[in-house]
Length: 411
Image (tube, rainbow, N blue to C red; front, side, top):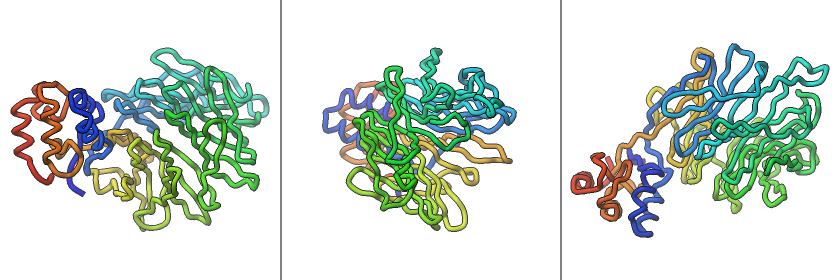
């Protein structure tokens, strides 16, 4: 792979305002192709204890959960270099966290409350799902009034998915995949068994997760238009973890001690492979079909980025990446969030692509005629970033000279 990076979605959009449709397509094609190297940022912690990131949007905001004194966790939002504790429903025993994050900053998650479960579980507080829009926090309904429920993802249509207990016992494994729309909660059902969980949804209102079959084996599912579809992983147990707006799905299948990740687009099932050994666990996918997770290397575990059928070892792309870093989510500009334990404390990290070849506007690995045409189409405009290479606020002669000076294959 060439040592290169590309303009962000926001930067490409600024260029495309003045570019003809064909050049807009050229620039859009570069989306999602992160550079071969990343800058590592520790996101910090709310209380100085373990912190786990779960989602990153295209604005660069990150949400997750951060623990305090070992008894509880709180949801957090990281933005502009600072971590912020998010509000809760007042519970101080148990988990609260944020999982879903839209580009407009609306967040979905769950919070412990001051309510307690019925005896004999009355030492444990009930968890309720929420949507947080600015300072307005809305509690969502649970499947049963006394049961826990967690919101896992949210889309721009206001749909929220997650899961909740279908029994009073907070330690019960009886759960159901849930959908919240217009203030109402819907049980999405199962694949013929007892349990199900929903983990992600896209802008097409398609939902993915896992559900029991009549035999009790859990299978990955795709839910759309009121129907739950079994994603065939050749009869093996499986979980669908993430879906993008092109109905590309990633998750894991497991059989006889082997855990592997898959990529499914409705036309075929791809085994993502591994960097050695048999273990691979995928967690996130972006709208360019890039997948992140963690895999065995033969004698260790490394985080990876998978794109265009090739798996890349993030340990070779990030200086001083902590041992056994787990990549959990990737946005459409190639920014990755994940976590690793240091001195037995989990740290949340952001991996930022390093722009080593900003003149390669079309993502081809070479600065050439298409890049020149894209720059000329944006002449006189003021985008935030490439092709304003000298950052003077205007695309002009100095930017043209910079592009010509770097003509040819990216070093």
